[in-house]
Length: 203
Image 1 (cartoon, rainbow, N blue to C red):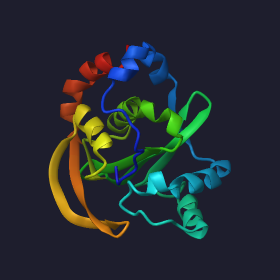
Image 2: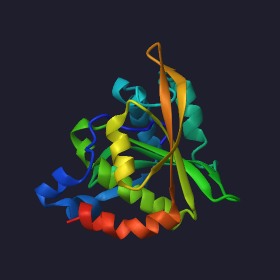
Image 3: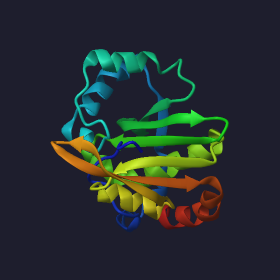
């Protein structure tokens, strides 16, 4: 999580289901490798105000800082980032961070920069969680979310995340100190609920 969230996400899958096309939506969501042609686009996404204001680090970053991050992508075995795609449209960024192979834990985050596609957030999150647990050997995902980002917190709770605690007045955003909510989801819990969630969200 790390604050990587858009601000117009749905709180659950109800509106998606009404459209009757969620299976098509779900099947067309992909997470692809970041290429050199994507670097400038990600830089612009990252510095958009609607994205930054939901990050723990809400400051604009320099292009030099961004290039340093991009050069580490192929070398870093504890952090992975992907472009979120719907069909052939690039929507945003998803990341797995601080992988601890000994304890089989990681943190994570994503954002959907393209505002007209933020309704896909529940399905993006559902699919990315599945990838983390089923392909990365992780038993626990933990995260930190700005408390006022209530839309994304509703999605997390709907998909099984539990609140572990609150860091009060923890980060400064726009000259205000914000609370940060600590959340987690265990693989054994995910196994119990994932089929039910898929039946509800994917029709």
